[in-house]
Image 1 (cartoon, rainbow, N blue to C red):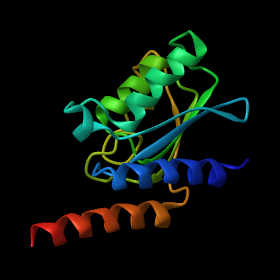
Image 2: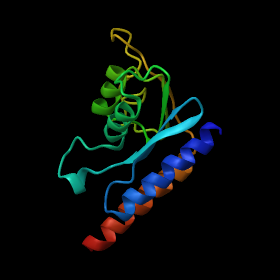
Image 3: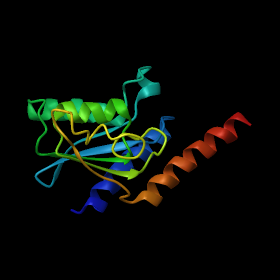
Image 4: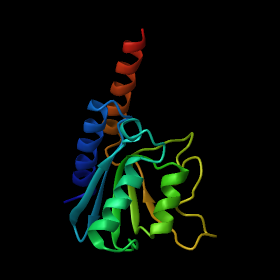
Length: 152
């Protein structure tokens, strides 16, 4: 499977998040060319601001692997990770993060900040953005359009 194919799997998770009333961010973890974990935002369901898709995914990966170290794991996520999520990926020693939608306001894999690639950190996570960007953007726009319509 290609980066675009794996991002399609992350998009499926994002759509499930939207259906559940969560900000539509989805993620999958890949090791050896196979998906080993899937997650989506669960902030509202859990009542916990730390339940971003990436954090949920890292927890699942650690359980599946029996280890917190992710040197051979690639994370596909529909929106550029925030500071918390990028920092967690650095701490977990993720090999690479591939995201769809850049976030110039708070993305921390090269857009607003570069937590993932900061040279002073113990580990740097290779980052690649813009994979299926338009589809990721449309999922986000559609979700917030519906939220605005409900409020009106």
